[in-house]
Length: 96
Image (cartoon, rainbow, N blue to C red; front, side, top):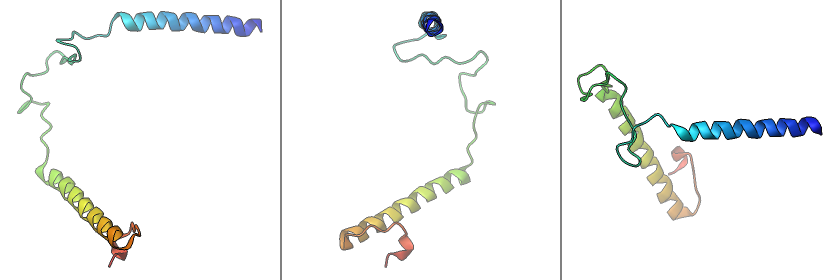
């Protein structure tokens, strides 16, 4: 019993100290409420053309859009089949 009280008291002290430290400094200089992002030193003002430019491959982005379009088409087939029959079918190949 005595050991659990000591453990509980020690935990309370640790939490109190941790909460005080966490609330004291958040490591940012906010320009306005909620606008607290600041770049690391050396980060360029303009990202395009710098070493931080992600240089997305248009072919890869097109694959993602095609996948989303195919998904929308499958969902439209499922929805139309459900409205006709009242049965939901996940496998679109089984829809006639």
